[in-house]
Length: 290
Ligand code: ADP
Ligand code: ZN
Image (cartoon, rainbow, N blue to C red; front, side, top):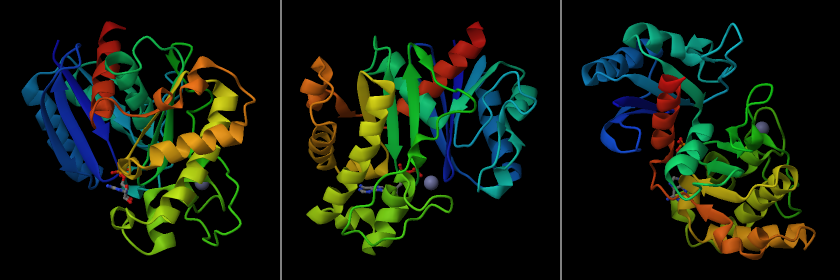
């Protein structure tokens, strides 16, 4: 099977050709401009490769509901050129093949469940902490959509008393994304996140906020595994700090084997940075067999 995969992001579009085993044969990255500028180039790429199906993991919000009249659309995104854009329709028409579609983070969790460390698990959460914060949720063996799709990056968290930063989300004063995504870290501390590497107080506060959200996810969804990715999580020192805060916040209330072994419970992605694109391959494969 030759399957096309698209990881559609606000800054770049990663396009790849792979197969059902998750093997990636080739990959390109195109800067995200307007649909008029960016989409024809992608169509050209997938056409030349002769793909039998395409899977798209997309920045959102999107409409993933097959019974909806706006299924396959990017909906109310602040990236205005892409708002109300029928991304699935455009590729279906141009390529004449089945197209699978989900959020970028659902794509990532699917990649980890199909090809990575989460194989065989039934309830897994993938959280990306980068330019924004998002969570893909695989629950009872299925990608969770519900009425739309989870927007767990915007859960409210409690501000720490010593933090006077106002938050970056235009909708919420104290959601995780507004308090802890890359742009918030950089605005709060006045430096690029990577340049803050040695400032322990930066990552301590960051871990404290991320742990609050994770504790909420654990209490609500009872995941067997939590995978953290995205640019901010390149700061590997965050992992032990987050695990410690989560244990402290849950305070022994939940007793499971998983929580006793935090090091294998809250973990980095296992597929390098390919979990998203590999998940998109699986979305494409599923579209083809369905
Ligand atoms: P996106 O979310 O746009 O797909 P990333 O996941 O790479 O992209 O996230 C970008 C954000 O991550 C930037 O805002 C930056 O603050 C942060 N970031 C990127 N690399 C690092 C790093 N090595 N250490 C800390 N933060 C980083
Ligand atoms: Zn928010």
